[in-house]
Image (tube, rainbow, N blue to C red):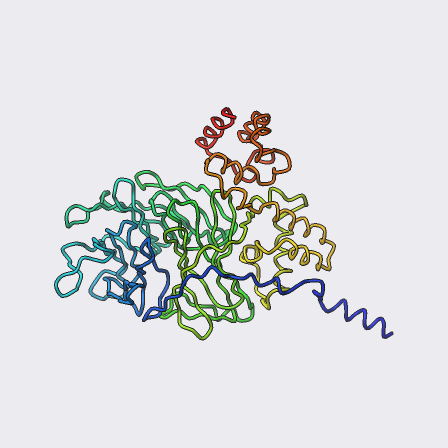
Length: 493
């Protein structure tokens, strides 16, 4: 009888004895510095390319923070101060000013990363204007090749949300609209737009599928076309300077019972419920479709990351009991992995179902969270060491243990081997290592030029194939220009 009771207790109590929980915490030595502003930042912010100046909202007002001197200068508007990347143009939103149209757009020229001021230090109104024939929120600015500025915003004043896009140009002390009015683009079911620095692409959150979607923008700004759909939910993603990477944060509900008292990012100041949610920052590499974690919070909130030069990141950071701060961070030296590539490498039945189960196991072992999976779990545990992943998979008490181990194998195969390409200077050789070698390293001698030439025809056939299961790179494709460069390179061997 005692043996039976003991057996029942074992069945009813999950055990992770074979798992080394010390491996749950990934060390983060990438933080460069932390800046605490005078006011508590509200919602998203922007920075100058060198990171010296931060443009943020505090107490219903806009400010420019000089992180070298600590000086904070007042800027026009009550929300969203957004500078162009050349430092010559600034936009902001009029929100709670009763003397100005609600959601109207301030357009201002800049000099030395500040608005042009009069003798009293106030904004010189001769160098800017207010666009009242619009209703904009969440605006962002791209700098076009011709020197004009493209402003993207969301107009949610309508029953069905829509995007607003309009180009502006500087003309002496005046700012002129290139088009006579905004391009109005239907965007039902989409939120939180962000334009790339060159004004050619934008990201949106698809609230129906809980995915981040990348669109290209027509040359004149009149329309958009979907080009990529990513496996994580994020709004206000930030493009780096060549648009090859995207920084984003995801929110994980960590306590289902407390989720009703959800955090309010847009409160003044923001109010976070650490017992209900956790936010973390990640970087997505569009070239190899990999994800690298920048933060690994189990409690607290890191959110709204922005790129500055040299792929350094600034993000807002909230620690329990501390003031909100701006954290400067390098991208951690963690081998990035790709969910897309792992899905293609998977040798089991259904990758996404097995990956979700593995992520739930990780949650049970490494956290005390009990919230539902919203894709955040997957990116949270994506980069854990292979040995630790196997331990977690083997801890499963179900019949899916073998499938979960195959997920670990696929994640390991999707890892981008940075050291193997770090010394490569030829862009085609680097492309081969990053894009094509993934999942194929045992089949084709990518690192041996002498042998590689014997596989020229096979490589080109796979690259040009329309069969997604055969084509290289798995889970993606090369552009026409990349294929041409590859052909020239292979012929030269």
